[in-house]
Length: 150
Image 1 (tube, one colour):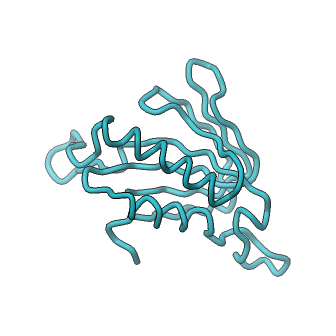
Image 2 (spheres, helix red, strand yellow):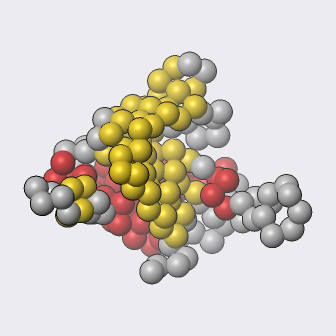
Image 3 (cartoon, one colour):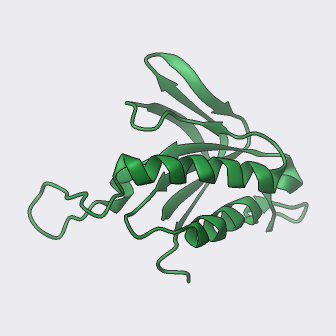
């Protein structure tokens, strides 16, 4: 799994001009699922996202987590995170999981994060043409890949 985590002061997802998810301070998380992803990857990544300390404390240091600031998450599925661009100019998405694997993993990620945070999160619509707006705070953008746990 890959996640692009953006610290935001607000973010919104719309499908057909209807808001499907909207948050104030927190994380916009773009989530990609690949063919080799496991439940272990999912749990590890959910824990990282829920506990990531990138919000400023009283000294201006990135020491606070979502829980500390009562922030929320807008979780968006994004298979294009697994684009391969080595050959030619048209990306290949062969490593991105097909919907029969990706949808259940996306839904489990929602439940896992909600369990860790103790509250509901906001989300997009899997496979839909989504319009995402955000105000990136910082900017702070973190990329986490479960296959490269650095």
